[in-house]
Length: 255
Ligand SMILES: Nc1ncnc2c1ncn2[C@@H]1O[C@H](COP(=O)(O)OP(=O)(O)OP(=O)(O)O)[C@@H](O)[C@H]1O
Ligand SMILES: [Mg+2]
Image (cartoon, rainbow, N blue to C red; front, top):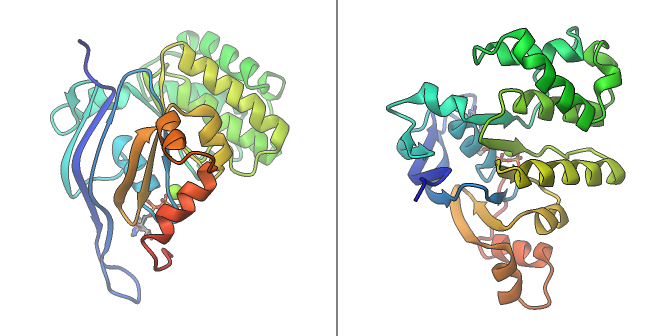
């Protein structure tokens, strides 16, 4: 049997003390999660729960304090470059140059993976077409609306055709109609075999899209269960109610 897409064991992240408080932050306190290949996995949790920290560690952008991470059976410590190749990241914050053209933002990203411009172009065209941005390809990214910028981030994250894509709040601030379009797109990508890890504060979105839900709260996994099973076990309740009960059980505000 082939390896899981992601295996995380006892992952801890402590951010060192900074600023006025002088206190370190224990953002992840021993997280263990297994994500099979082809899964559509929703990673939920309140503000400050540790979702972006986890995603950033998986993407190789943030160092972990301890624990192990394997991607497609490959240890992140032993072969970080190989792991990076199989992961695409759509970060929470826009982080492209506002002066660069849409097409260049996508194509230049391919260069980081050693993919030439001519190899990347057909992939970029398909992605930008599918995401409704092809007409905008020669515009500077500053000319895009917020929703278009979100879609540009998705196109950029997929340009090297990764096996796993990590999407950190990809639909934040996106209108209802556009969000539905993005759901369709993500379902199609997942249907083609790409493993998806999605964080979102729109719980309806997680309910509609994901087949598995993990809820983290204060750096600890509180729920790790199939979406159907979680909803069936809490018969009649909406995911939002289930979520709030779990978070409340941990009282104290998070931020
Ligand atoms: N670079 C950093 N330096 C210090 N502390 C950080 C850093 N990044 C995150 N943290 C802290 O780690 C904790 C987890 O933050 P993280 O961004 O992972 O949460 P999140 O679940 O993504 O929240 P949100 O839903 O608001 O995006 C928070 O207490 C946050 O303040
Ligand atoms: Mg976050």
